[in-house]
Amino acid sequence: MLKNGWWKVLGILLMSYTLYRGLTTHVPAVDLIEQSIRNLFFHVPMWMVMIVILFTSAVYSILYLNKQDLKYDHYAQSFLEIGLLLGVCGCITGAIWARATWGDYWPNDPKLKGVTAGMLIYAALVVLRAAIDEPKKKAKIGAIYNIFVFPIFLAFIYVMPKLNPGLHPGSGDTVQFVDYNVMDKDLRMVFYPAILGWGLLFLWITTLRYRMIRIIYKRNLKQLNKV
Image (tube, rainbow, N blue to C red; front, top):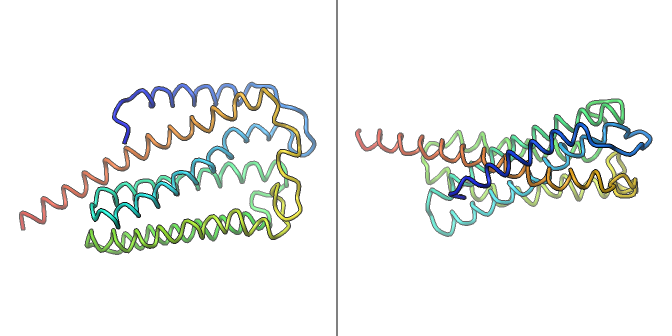
């Protein structure tokens, strides 16, 4: 993980900027979307960062299978759990946006169905890991599961919606979000920093979770050695 704290300060500054500009910047008047377009600075970056974090978790699982060092499994677990936390945050902000634009918090949409299926598969991985006590066995089974579930998750949230008509832009023959022509200079000046800001914030949370996992692991190891 990153050793110096400069990126934490940068994350705080970017998130402060995102929250302030996200609520105050001028947004174009677009039918249906209207002021809910401000969720672009929250919902979309969260999902983008979530994909990167879950991918990183899968990479660490590969490293564990290659190195057989539990440190890499602990990294994989940390990124996995924070990725799921981001998924929950993305679902909440998405539900608020859906209510504002489509009149329902969870409408009938293929992307939402894919998200539900994908999140449940990842949640099953967390439950499976919790059910295994032996660290190396947990790490090996969790790593194999984690590596295979990531492309399945992508298929659920990106490929499946492309094949079926739905409400989300880009689903089936639905127009792409960029076709709405709402991404003017003002929105871009908030959107791109928001991606980096959310990324650094949840990377920080991941490092904290990793430290907790390592402390718990070392404490349990000491207790076993005393027996």
